[in-house]
Structures are given as C-alpha cells and as structure tokens.
Image (cartoon, rainbow, N blue to C red; front, top):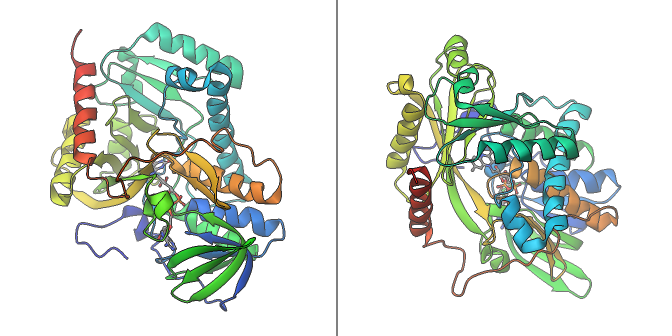
Length: 427
Ligand SMILES: Cc1cc2nc3c(=O)[nH]c(=O)nc-3n(C[C@H](O)[C@H](O)[C@H](O)COP(=O)(O)OP(=O)(O)OC[C@H]3O[C@@H](n4cnc5c(N)ncnc54)[C@H](O)[C@@H]3O)c2cc1C
C-alpha cells in the first residue's frame, strides 16, 4: 500500500485496495494470470466463463495498480496519428487501429450496461481543447470520414463556441468525441473483481510472482506462497512489471501519471466551469486531462511528469488548473496521487506472445479501454476464438542497455515540452 504522505487517491476514498477473499492455495491451474487490474480481471473473467480453471496472482492488495488510480476517461486513444500509422503500416492496416478503438470503446460501454455495473459511467463525450496550429478544414474532413465509416459524429468546435463547453479561454477550438465518457475506475475494477470471483476465478493478493519457468509444454510459476503449474500464462502487469519479468520490463517505459482533485466547489460552480460536464483533454504532447468528479462537486485534473519531486509536481498540477480556470487559483486541493502508465518504444499497445507467455501491455495511458479489451483478446487467443487484434504480434523493441529504469525521462519530457512550445508559437 502506498503510505507516501503526498499520496491520497480520490477514488480510494470510496473503494480502497483490499485483500482478496481467502482461498485455498492450489498447485495447478489451466491458466495463471499475473497482475489483478483491468487486464488480468478481463482475461480471467472471459476464461472462467468459458469453463477454465483460472488463478490470478497479485503482488499487492487488490486495486493497488493503475486501474484504480486513473482519470477514468474512456478514451481508447492511439497516440500515433493516422498519417504516422499509414506511413508505417499502409492505409488499410492503419484504418484497422481506429476500427479496433471504436469496437473496444463500444465493448466497454456494452459490458458496463449488460453486467449492470455500478461505476458511475457517464457517456458525456470528451472534448480535446486545441492549442497551437491546426487546420479546421482538415479536422472537419476527418470528422466527416469518421461519421461515414462508424456512424459516430465527432464535432469541430469553433473558438467562439468553446464557451458552451468550458469557461476557459485558452483553447483555439476543440473536437468533441461523443463516444468517450467517464467512469469511477476503482468502482469498475472492484465490480470486475466481483464478477471474476462469481465466475470461479481464484484470486490471491499479496502474492508476488518471483519467476516464470517453462517446463516442456507447461509453466511453473514461483511465488512467495509456493509454486503453481499452469498450461498458459498471461502477464497482466503492464507499468508495474518488476524484475520477475525482465524481457517485458526491458520493453516498457513506466511514466509517472498523476492527478489532483479540488475541494468540493459545488455543482453549480463545476457546471459553470464545464457547462456540459464533458471529459476534457488537450491537443499538446504533454497536455492535461480533466473532468468533473462523478458527483459533479469537484474537478479532477491529471498530467505526466519526468522528475521525482512530488511536492513540485503537485504545485505544477495546481498551476495548470489555474491556467485553465484562473478562478480556481486559490481553490484547495483535497487529493493528490500518482501511478505509472506504460509506453512501448513505438507508442502502440501490444498483444504479443513470447516463449508461450501472452503479454497484453503498453497501453500508453489509455488502458481504461485497452487493458480490458486486450486482456479479453488474450483470453480469446487461449480459447481459440477471435483473438485477432491489430495489436497482435507487433514487434516489441527495446534499447541497448535499457533494463526498465527510464533514466532518459527528463530528457524526453524536455523534448516534448519543446515540441509543444514550437507548435504554439506563431509561424
Ligand atoms: C494517474 C493515472 C491516470 C490515468 N488516466 C487514465 C485515463 O483517464 N484513461 C485511461 O484510459 N487510462 C488512464 N490511465 C492508464 C490506466 O489506468 C492503465 O492503462 C490501466 O489501468 C492498466 O491496467 P492493467 O490491469 O494492465 O495494470 P494495473 O492495473 O497497473 O495492474 C497491474 C498489476 O500487476 C501487479 N504486479 C506487478 N508485478 C507483479 C508480480 N511480480 N507478481 C504479481 N503481481 C504483479 C501490480 O501490483 C498491479 O496491481 C491512467 C493511469 C494513471 C496512473
């Protein structure tokens, strides 16, 4: 559990991490899953409902990873642009990334509805506030193409219309995506845990996996509770991958993502700042994301950082909030917390198999949609059904001498900050 004084996760006030219900240790399972967040639970639920014997092994308490700490914005973002994807994969395959993102978002909404999940799901849309240079004509053309293919109409918001969405005057315009919304992430994760347990998944918390060993066609997993043999292994540790999985650790860059929640400022005030109560992001590389709390009483804002000074980071987030909404400059911050998100070097999520272990990982800060979706895909691969994904078997690169400790983060952040500044300066 995080005992750092600067750590006070808003979501944990209602759904704190907790131990898994007691269960008898077993020495064999059809499938062992390492890590109990959205990825592990999604895979476990799918497999158990198909009649498989599934064990999830979690190092900490249940709900200590990123899945309960995040902004709860169901963005399903792909960080590479359509142009970048086309250049790398060709037009047809590039389109498949967006097809899968639309399908994954819709699948999450359907899951929440069909399973009657109480997670404060608010399908209110998300606005990306535009800063710097952009072509309104091009955005409108892209929106029309999106509408034609998916029947979902993103809306270009002119600068003078932004007041319908935000009191902030810092944006030059915006793009509203109606198929994105907000959830209470800790409620969703604990509901997924409930469904997994009901389906028969055995979950062991405070059980770190120390080693995964391949023995002929099976795996033996060493934990500090004992060994367990399994026919299949799914690694669902993402940004929290430790030295037990050196291959994966070398291929993911863990980045600190953190958030603040204001004191209760009241629904009227929140509504005057964000009239349609939408989720918000920014078009910059190092943009902030923010949203009303599900009860509409506060504003939650998050961003990424590349240094280790937590007090400075909190001030920076408060400053960012005050830049967006100057009226909140003196507002008290009631909660401040951090977690890690995982970036593969090519900034595309992954569903790869190596030495028989299945790795859904590298969600680039958009795992509310991708972790659940790719966890499910990993399960379907084992079941031999529709496990195909455009993220399947993409090469997963590393850098020479990189072992999982991203010493280059401050440099990378400076680079992205510079790009944002250049993009914002008049040409
Ligand atoms: C502050 C913050 C804000 C974010 N905001 C958003 C957002 O608004 N929208 C969005 O889509 N995404 C967001 N994300 C990202 C999202 O939360 C993650 O992508 C997603 O939760 C990943 O889920 P997961 O199940 O793969 O990993 P996690 O939930 O992190 O679970 C991994 C688990 O593996 C366990 N583990 C690690 N090593 C071992 C081991 N050796 N043995 C056993 N267990 C192990 C860890 O203890 C951990 O519980 C945010 C993340 C953070 C931190």
